[in-house]
Amino acid sequence: MSKNAPLIATAVTAASAAAGFFLLQKRAKNLKGNSSKKGEQAPIKLYYYKATGKAHQIRLALAAANLDFTEVPAASFPPTPEEKALWRKLGGNNTTNVPMLQVGDKFYCQSAAILRTVARMGGLMPANENDIDAMYFTDKLLDDAEDFRSEAYKSFVSWGATKEAAENFEKVVVPLHFTNMERQLKEAGSDFFLGDTLTVADIAIYDAVANFATSRIPGDALSEYGALKAFVKRVEANPGIAKYLKSDGYAGIMKFDLASLGH
Ligand SMILES: N[C@@H](CCC(=O)N[C@@H](CS)C(=O)NCC(=O)O)C(=O)O
Image (tube, rainbow, N blue to C red; front, side, top):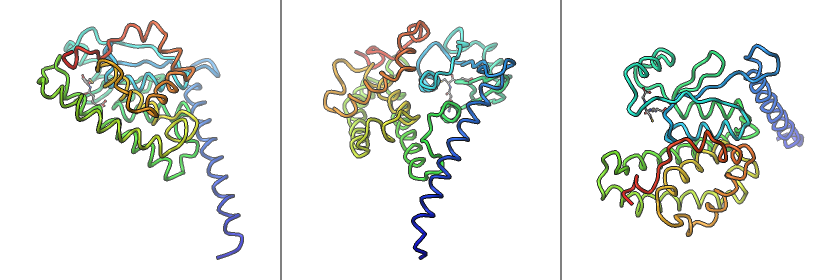
């Protein structure tokens, strides 16, 4: 091997980090450049119910990235046939369309894809998108959060789940997943899962923990998970997220509460 190999490897890593950074900048600028006035953010609209659900991690990502958005809430749950027809016309899918994000005149569907899109637009991906391990860990955590949400959706007594399913979620599923999240956070050894800066992975895990578990369980469901508990506070202290959590927009949204688990 050439004795310059480590030097070349360092130079290549630095170049790809710089390229990733400029790509993000360009994307953020594109988002801002979609509107008629130069430098202004293109209007962003979120189509969903007035509820946390599958849209909430998208709201949090928009808030953390300081991207203003307005909501186009459904009038009811389930939606009216007219609303469904409108979503289908805008999103184009005969399957599901909401959560759906409109940026300028472009429509984005599928919550996980929208979340990643917002993260790329708002600089919430790991700094170097060419870092294979950082991107793997990001995707892995997004999948961990989604696995947990899928389990949580089976436990809503308000939507017909049995008492046993609710108990199983609280006593078995939550400890299983919280232990796994806690382990990975401790192994990361940093304030957030991918270093000391908030990324999309933190938002996904935070949303899963706070909106699908702790808000539904009496007492302190995080008392045995010290790292995760401190992490939740850190995410809530992010300036964009803190501002959003104090907003009227957030206050007006239905959250999953104790009754959803039959308490
Ligand atoms: N995989 C989709 C599932 C979307 C989904 O199930 N949306 C529910 C609300 S959480 C719905 O009511 N969809 C009705 C529709 O889009 O017409 C995603 O994550 O976005």
